[in-house]
Length: 441
Image 1: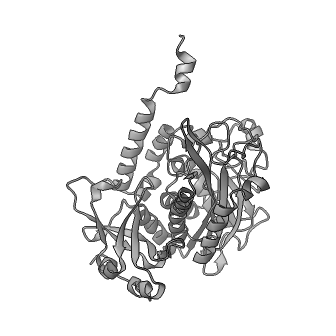
Image 2: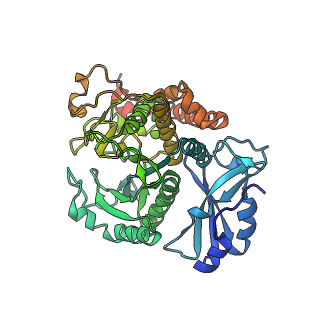
């Protein structure tokens, strides 16, 4: 037995109540890949008790082909009944290896930091702004799915939004059925780009829902002949996709970032938390922007709309989107560095670990900057810049003792192995740009 049930209703009881015939028992690997087994409801009792077993080498968790299986023990509190196929229930899982929590699984990494947070008397709550593109595959490659979506500045465009009403409204309807509290959706700053927002929750729930949201969006888009992608920068000339995260700490029903907040919007503990994130920003970048493509977004020149909307400096401000961290209103701050390729479990674990470190050390974030850093960043010589590519970000992460400890020995080793392989593969490619630029040398 590797897991003990504490919920009031078992998955067996849930299956009978909701008419569920199958369960997708799911876990997420270190690269953000979602793995699952389809388990008949008639067999879910044993899986609740002992887990669904997976060949450990078959997913990106750092174990070799000689290793025994991992056990994915479903968390009944994460149960989501598929709105488009209600006979199936999806559950996020905690991963065990040889009867013990498997330290390198992303959800387990987040669990460890959440436990540290609870020891300090806090609950960490987070909300995510999930941006994605709708594309179609053509003979020439991927293109914007809607051929009429061509405006130079398409952000909030009503006509382009409503041409995708079928998909967007279906997603909102499903999220309402699931009790997520969706409240706004819009056409974003790039052609073919959309964002849906739902109500924040405790960080683990938000992580689980983000995993399911990506699966749901991709599935419904595919049913309509589209490809939905959360790739940070699929096109060089238009804005990339972020995965901005809003953060707050709570003690019961009291928002500790709001209680005692100054006119800038945060309490002393809120500023210390924010200061910790700034202090660890370079190392965090590898978790927040974990792909080669991420740095096409972060290092982008001005796009067709006139702005990249992505940070370049380690800075914070008020309701100012030119900073890495933004305080839009009292009681929370937004991290704008995170992009659509991030494994949200790892991103939230890193954010929280850095914030806790800031609280323990009473780290000051310094004076906020009320300027447009997109235009005036060079006027602040003391501001540090974020890493400009994946190699720099990985080097910064490796030098960050707190974040390496957060990932754990096997988690960090495996993450680096995969990411260094990705960087090497990228560096070995000769691009079309290079051919055009240098062929006549």
